[in-house]
View 1 (tube, rainbow, N blue to C red):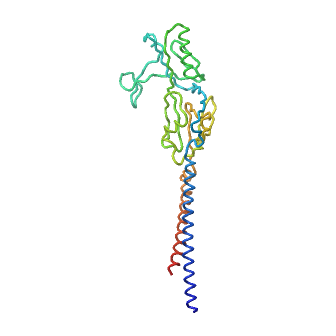
View 2: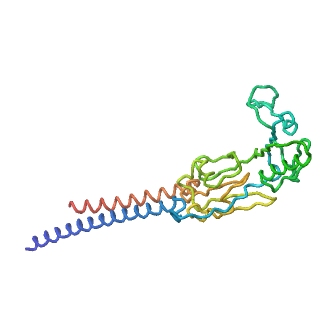
View 3: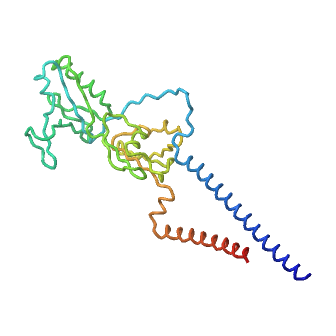
Length: 290
């Protein structure tokens, strides 16, 4: 009778151990699935842009004056009219460029129109018209000012004046796929367009930690933009200006990768945890088979 009780007791213990192991494994699976679901939800919130947009709602867009001319800008100014020879005296000459060489006057290479550099006083020097203050003005305002001067001095009639920026560029750094300096055609680009030019943010880029560094009027201003919120449209840095620097901050995972010791310690800790879990499971299985 004692032996039967002992065997029954051992059998019951083994059954309890197996039952406990199964319960432990089931709970472990549930925990892992829950963690994966939570990580998935958080990942979506971390990488999605403009999460609080009002769908199918019309919103007024504030009129943008456009970027204004600053010292050290380079402008392309072309004056044209019916009398091409008369208009030519108001235009800079066209020169030819050759790759990896000095500027040459031959017909070979790529032709390019010279530009007017805005000096420290915000002025440019035009043929015949002389010096003209342009700092703080848009290119459209400069066009009208030149036309007004030519007309008031009776130098040209029915002329067309075209002003373009020659040095409108921005720099995009940080967690984007293709960081670098980008030249902009025209005079209007927003931060979303700029990021798309750089191939979008990487998965490690913080969507709510995008900074625009702007130097204007002898002052430097840093703006923080949250691309996950529709409020980014209201930021004074949503529309970029010449020589703006856009920087995307990395998340903790990317930052940790830059520190080899920190990354190694994290890897060791993960493997120790996995080894401990496997050892516990193996011990329970072995005990159940005895």
